[in-house]
Image (cartoon, rainbow, N blue to C red):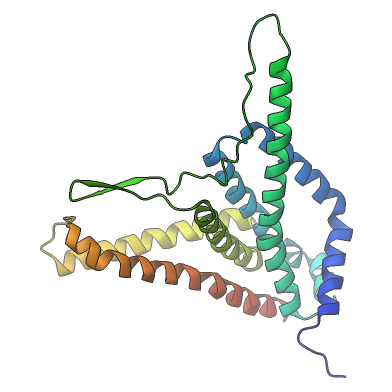
Length: 266
């Protein structure tokens, strides 16, 4: 009997299997995240760091069952193609996880602000431990792009719209998740640590290659001369090329993950 490579019914059954097996864990996990966001709701660097770091461990452990003898056999015996299983993994570790992070942040922010203002209304013997504060959305008002760039002695604010900053966070999150999802399939144990070390070593090697190229093409001294005309001429194309490269890395790691998952089946 011919089996289709992609079927929405099987996709739905895979999601059903995931939530059936991990429903209690998911409820506890996201409940803890709400509590954490209640305390760090107004510190956007901590919020972004938590989203990225927690996402790393979530992605790095998603396919851990395929490395177990008993669980691995059960996983590959599931009547679904490897493409469907990987697609579910991508949706869960990237889009689902990021969406739930936004929801838990919103809930934690509202509950935290309400609790803070309620305690501030109470008189603890005049200690004034808590102070009234309005509801703020630090994550959506991220100041990552709120820097000032000086060109030709003129100050140009590099402010970007809130949705642009959030989009950059989401793209960075997708890239990190794609790397660690591949690591969860490739490495048999300690997936998060081994993936981190691999990325670190690759970055060091690329830096060494870059230094060697600069020394071979120059006079042996690395000098950086910033010129406004050079920035205007080369800055934008370089940024476009870099962004394009980073964007392409996301589907690249997804494709590599598919072939690695298929090999694991064999």
